[in-house]
Length: 227
Image (cartoon, rainbow, N blue to C red):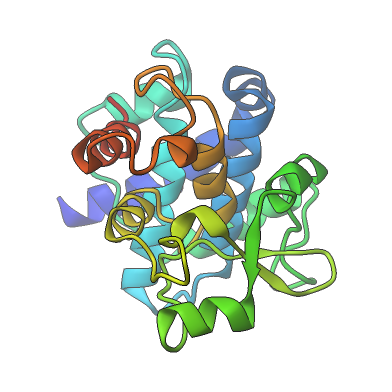
């Protein structure tokens, strides 16, 4: 059974390649960009680090769960054999092959995928520099804190994550960011915080401190679990 579920990871990646054009259309530009970022994270994961590969594969699955129910890739995820998808020996290699199909640089051939220019809007949000974030955190920022790499090479940490007046990161932000896999896809997590959310009735970053924490974590968990 373990071998069958591990083989499901390779089947899933093959299906993504087979249906890559319809996936783009079905997800829309923003979620497709998130998918590319998470495939990049999977392609860059050390093949011998089972935990890192599992986590990156989980990130890919979360985006694909947003496909409509009739899509073949969504059908694979909903099938008994695809319900639990464990990485196999060819998972990272399959992700790198997908990178080539999409025309993106793979870790074996060049630098990691750069964010879509549309993400420049995220970089225009108020943010702290890396030294400022370290000062607020009392050391290296935790991995779940969103840090966005600007085109000048510096990291920017969206300011909403921190309590005002020199405060430390909000615990609810770190909890939500863990659900959103911000450590492997900071751009996707940032897009969630700065985009309108009909379930919450506004933009999550703007609602921080105005809504109970459990409403924010509940909305993030709903997204993470593909409900």
